[in-house]
Image (cartoon, rainbow, N blue to C red; front, top):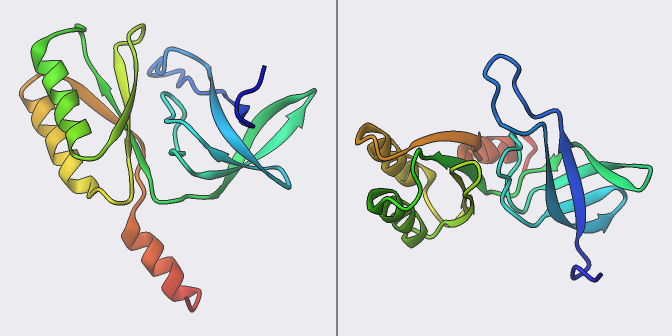
Length: 163
């Protein structure tokens, strides 16, 4: 079967034993192979932490299965997750629609009652974060951070590298 040249990368060991979250111990993400054990993530992580859409990651080939090793380069996207108790509530649907209207992409999982959010570099993360805080305060849904790309840290890194 042709998947448009994309491969699957396994992110294992995800569950925090104390919090028992996420509800799965591994997640498989689509990625574009770049060569030299590097791949570019091509979907929004639902459970994996520390990575975001479009990030370049290093992988190990273990018996034909690509296993996430480390992040080679973050590419400006941030990942958050919206968590809700009941699907189909107008307030939840409206909250998700507002986030999408702000320029974010989403991928949902009805089974786990959550929506993964990709905040691209063209969207100000602080504005989306403020929206999510408001939704949480109004008890519409909860949220958690999967990965926050701090553009100020990237600028500081470039300045210290002489770039």
